[in-house]
Image (tube, rainbow, N blue to C red; front, side):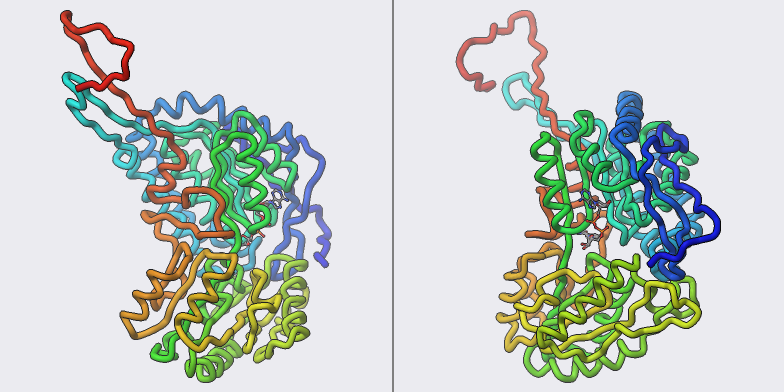
Amino acid sequence: MNKPTDMKAESVPLWINGRRHAASSSRSGDVTNPATGEIVRQVPFCNAEDIAAAVGAAKAAFPGWRDTPPLRRARILMRYRELIEAHRDELAKLITEEHGKTLPDAAGSVQRGLEVVEFATGIPHLMKGEYSEEVGTNVDTHSLRQPLGVCAGITPFNFPAMVPLWMYPVAIACGNTFVLKPSEKVPSTAMRLAELFKEAGLPDGVLNVVHGDKPAVDALLTHPDVKAVSFVGSTPIARYIYETCAKHGKRVQALGGAKNHAVVLPDADLDFATDALIGAAYGSAGERCMAISAVVAVAEAGDPLVAKLKERASKLNVGPGTGKDVDMGPLVTCAHRDKVSGYVDKGVAEGAKLVLDGRNHKTPAHEDGFFLGASLFDQVKPEMTIYKEEIFGPVLVVLRAKTLDEAIALINANPYANGTAVFTRSGGAARKFEREIEVGMVGINVPIPVPIAFFSFGGWRNSLFGDTHVHGMEGVRFYTRGKVVTTRWPDANALPSGFNMPTLG
Ligand code: NAD
């Protein structure tokens, strides 16, 4: 249960045309501080009218922004980069307050987002086209990339700054305008990021922020002036976004959920692997799309690895994200905490071996917070619910495999394919894993192959619907469309065009 506060919590405004706006919708939701259980804000749930106002502002701003030279757009992004850096701690505090993750983790996620802004400052170079002279006699051809118009972004709760920053800096650098709908559970960071962009010199209407749930999202997906949609969230919603956008003729990239496996081979340095896996499984309370949630221990790696994982996981310091030396904060909401705890019940009922039970964890002085300790299961089988479903909490499951081939087959049969990792000292085994694994992002002795701004980020199968990954050059391609121009400047004696297929030569 959320703890009621004495005072009525303030309502988060919308950001439309460079100003704070009240929503016209009367529907709203609670934003809680997961460490205390208190309602800290109210968030409006926008209706179609609110969405139309934001899209209208973005549409009106588009021609001027499209015609702003990329170099000038880049200079605004450079100032924005400085402002985000200067406000990193303030942004991290907002993230921790509404999401629950620890302050250093929150600051790290701002840094990751900042790197996409840095990438986007290269836009004059990134949007360069190609040119070929004499494709035919006196005929030249060049290609260029142009922005799409109004783009929309719909983002999940687990990275209130980083995931929005994967999207709009690249879209805006390309000359588009943008409407962002952050998760209604963590609405405040996106608002602050929008204000800072205005301070950096972004013209009004280029970036707009709206809030809400399904009706707000549906209004964006069906609005005729929205040309492209980027989505990050759970798989069922990602699939829905992809299908709805396709039906309405929109360009779409929809990143979904994950079940990321780490394979540990018998030759691996088990202390090194354990260290890496503990951070990857339980960091941010397991609420990361790149969290390792399943370990596949190969052959004799199994027993010593499980013993080491248990020892390390049982020592994790669980507490409020603002606390000193805290490893893991609370879950985002009370309902999510209870859902994750329910998965542990299910694992026990289905016969997995519960090596460490985090269900009864108590955080002193934070009895109303949404805390859960670390749980560890061994002897998990592929048909069990705790393996089949994304838990998105501090629960790590260990499966056993006899060989690397068996481990690879298991991972390739899983419907999710966001990230995966292998721990080994063998270059040959690592190379085989890299070649044969059917997953979008792979770590070799790296548990979370983190997003690197100048590469792209995205999974395969049910972890991504669409053709392009986010940011990097894939982001530039997603937010622009190509045009090819063939040019001839005929002299007075040029031959008139005929009716046959021109061959140019
Ligand atoms: P979610 O799917 O519940 O919500 C994501 C967004 O969709 C939110 O803005 C939400 O308001 C909106 N939404 C929710 N229900 C909707 C509906 N019925 N119709 C239309 N819109 C709806 O996800 P979440 O719980 O906020 O985030 C956690 C999920 O995101 C996990 O599954 C995680 O793996 C995934 N995730 C994936 C990546 C990735 O890169 N693949 C990154 C971060 C998070």
